[in-house]
Every structure is written in C-alpha cells, then in structure tokens.
Image (cartoon, rainbow, N blue to C red; front, top):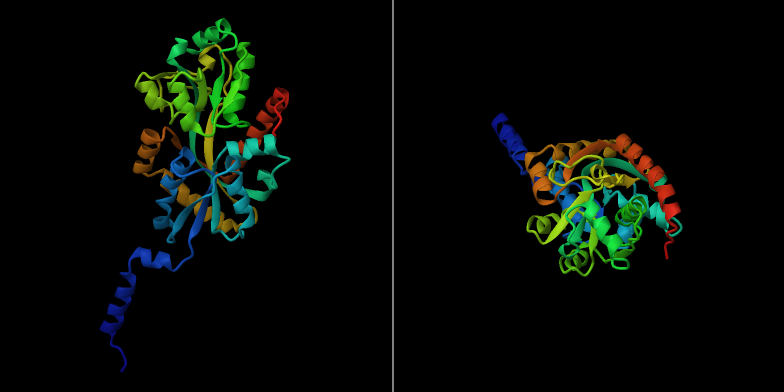
Amino acid sequence: MKPNRRQILLSSGALLALPHAAWAQAKPAIRILVGFPPGGATDAIARTVADRLPNLLGQPVIIDNKPGVGGRMAADAVLSAPADGLTFMVAPNATPTFQMLVFGHQIRWNILKDFTPVATVASYPLGMGVALSTGATNAREFIEWVKKNPGKGSFGTPGLGGQNAFLGVQLAKTAGIDLPVTPYKGSPPMVNDLLGGHVPSAISLMDGMMAHHRAGKIRVIGIFTKARSPLMPDIPTFAEQGIDVTSGEGWTGMWARAGTPAADIERMQKAVQQVLQMPDVKEQMSQRLWVQPHFRNGAEMDALQRAELAHWEPIIKASGFKAE
C-alpha cells in the first residue's frame, strides 16, 4: 500500500523530532586526553569546555584522564592515536614548554612538529603565597625576611622542572636572595604545608591559594604577570613592587595530533570559541576556577608557544637544572 502525503509528512516529522542525543549517539565519541587527575585545575577547565561541546558538535565528547609525568602520558596517548579528528588533548602550557626544554631527551615528541594547535581556552596568573609565620605582607617584606633568616627561606612548587619552579629561580636571582625549591607531588600537599608554616612560601596557580588568602590563613604577596589580573585586582604584581619577573602567565590549550584534517581542527576550534562565549562558562571559570576564558586560534596559539619556548630556553640553561 502506497503511503499518502500525510503519512509521509508524519514520518518525516517523527525523524526530525528525534532527540539530539539520538543523532549524537550515531556518531563516534570525541576523546579529550587530560594528563592530570580528576578534580585538578586542568581537569576542571577541560570539563567545563567538554561538557558543552556535544550540543555544538552533535556527537559525544568524553574526558580521558591519563595522569603522569607532568602531562606527558596524555601527550603520548594522543601521538599513538589515529589523526582522524576524534582525539584531542587539553593541557597547560607547562606540559609542552617545560617537557620539551627540561625533559626533551626523555620524550618522543616535539610539540611544534608532532601536534597541531587548536585553540587556547583559558589564561591565569601564577603567584606566590607566604606563610603567616614570615610576617610578610608584600614581596619586599618577604625578601627582607629571607635575608634575615639564612637557611630558612624556600619556596614550594607542585613538582620540579615546571614554570612555577623557574619563576622561583628568576625571583631569587632578581632579588639577590638564596631561595631553594621544595617540590611537592601536586598543589594540595604544598598548600597544606604553607597553611601549617612548614614551608615559608609557595608558587602556584591561584585556585589553590586565594580562598586561604581571603580567609586570612596565608598571604598572597604578588603575581608574576605584567599587569594586575581582573580576577584579583587587589593583588599587586611583583613588577610593581620593584621585582621585574613578569613571565608568570599560565594558559591552557587544546591540541590534536599533526595530520588531523584541517576541517576537523576548524570545526573544533569554532565550537570551543562558542563555548568560551557562554555566560555560564565565563562565570564558572572566573568565579570558581580563578581563570579567564581566553580564546586564541591555532595560528595565534602556535606563535605564543614558539615565543614561550624562546623565552624560557636561556633561563633554564642558565639555571643549571638537570632532569633526573
């Protein structure tokens, strides 16, 4: 029996009325690798973006955490995956920059050759917090405390060989003080020791320190950027306190394996840009994660990466730091 026009229209309408999720399930899932544990800053940023991508891309998007070696495990996994537009990586700038410059002899990839930049998603200042036991309320007072207490000054970092650690090296050199590094396995134990006065200072992202600063349990004495951050306008820069260390802007970006079709890169890039313009994303990033949504396209991100590598290479060489 031949269907009449009404039956055809009803059938078409039923297809069009299928839930968006049903269409998405017909497509393979996009996997976003994150080289850090769930619950950390990079994971939270990645999930804020990834949770909103399915509605824009029309297919599932999942986060795949592969923590280890400063994000290297996730990068290795992307490199091993097909360049088919279904695998991406979200990572902080420290992963490509400092893995290459510090641990280059240990890794099997080059961020400029083996990966394609998609977009940056966030930027944020790195800063220093000090224990209340130091009595310091600003950078100059902390430097004086270090000078008056030889052998007691040090700074904590969530790991060795990263941006936090080398900012401390720059600070010590610029201020003319002895300030050895105390490495930790992540930010939580470092912040706990800072709260307890077991380490006199720490350099890190602000998400782990600002709540304690606001509560009067530690003192954030400055951030390592050229200008004050709108996220925390009351916190001065080290530069305005007479200490010219301004290379402490961190950023988080998205990469794909080199060879990924340009159409897939552009499609993801446009979706990320749309996500970062959403009011709830802006609020969540700035109010809860202490970062700013910051979109740069692939070309701009590539230029940023190259400039950062050129900036840090002589600093790392001059520090004499050797990776184990």
